[in-house]
Amino acid sequence: MKLDDYNFAGKKAIVRVDFNVPLDENGNITDDTRIRGALPTLKKILEAGGSLIIMSHMGKPKGKVNPKLSLMQIKDAVAKALGRDVKFAPDCADAAEAAASLQPGEVLLLENLRFYPEEEGKPVGIDKADPAYDAAKKEMKEKQKDFAKKLASYADVYVNDAFGTAHRKHASTAVIADYFKPEDKMLGYLMEKEVDAVDKILSDIKRPFTAIMGGSKVSTKIGIIENLMDKVDNLILCGGMTYTFAKAQGGNVGQSLCELDKLDLAREIMQKAKEKGVNLVLGVDCVAADDFKNDANTQICSVMDIPEGWEGVDAGPETRKIFADAIKGAKTILWNGPAGVFEFDNFAAGSRAIAEAIVEATNNGAFSLVGGGDSVACVNKFGLADEVSYVSTGGGALLEAIEGKVLPGIAAVKG
Image (cartoon, rainbow, N blue to C red; front, side, top):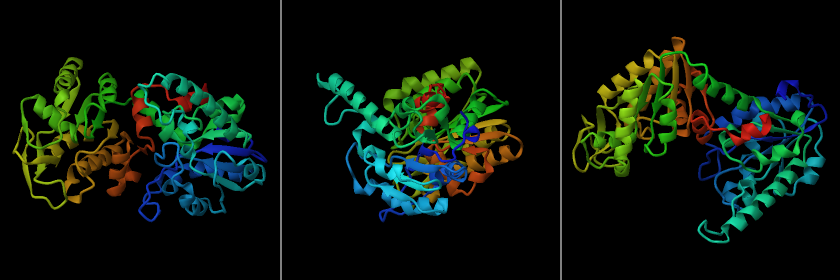
């Protein structure tokens, strides 16, 4: 069932969103991208005469109540975004009465789902090595079903609009769907857009296809790198990964981030790219710093020859030019992971160069998908989010989708 085809009049809709937004020390939202992303779905249901039960997680409370991770902190922001009052249920598993009393056009926000271990479905307080773990896990899976059934009982229809958690088989993202008929469960607008964007990257490729993979470790990106090898024309590897590849080629990387146990893997990736005819683009120079802070002393040096006591913190000027050249001619672009410590203004030039090259290519007709928390933060920081084709709200979910994995949150709805 599609959102646009469903008659929400007089119906209660329970909607899984991803309102896991960053908060400052005073509980104020510092980036409301995820709330804004869910608004089209939420407003559609309300304007069609339905009532809303909104559920989300925040942070990692590990199955325990933590006031610092209470969704009560974002209630007023959600109300302001929706332009109407929002009621609050302080216990997501004890909200039947509040849900039952909802009138068309009214909104109820449930407390953090992860205050209950049943949401994630993992046994608490028992180690995986414990002989009793398997029994505890089986028992928790039954409790998870009961928890999902309780949430489902609040509503007539289920909508999943939380792409950021679509790769998790949690009570609210996948298990709950079992308690709704096929015609009473659907993906929200945001989720549909995410699925379409991934399809364009994987199935509707306009060439050349350039993927930019950044981040600190090769090990966390190996699945996606291997899957992309069969699809891309250019593969840019940047960020902390740079120095593992430099070391693998016999370079001196000083104090730079480097996975010494992944040098063979780096060499295998280089060999595989060569065999598949993929243009593997690696940094040649870097901005090196003598301390991990914005005002550290810096120098430009070859990635193969970083002095002792110094660490690579950003792509150098020659590398920025090489990266930009590989991006500007592309017709399909995927960016996941920054080129340096972009959070520090003095080390953001490499990531900015990537972002600006992507914008130029997009203006020339390329489809560009930016995903993963740090890359999204980059385009937001540089004020360029509206100038790329699509900014994904999902980090892990996007990576798993691009790896070709089935996402439980989508499969549970689509079957």
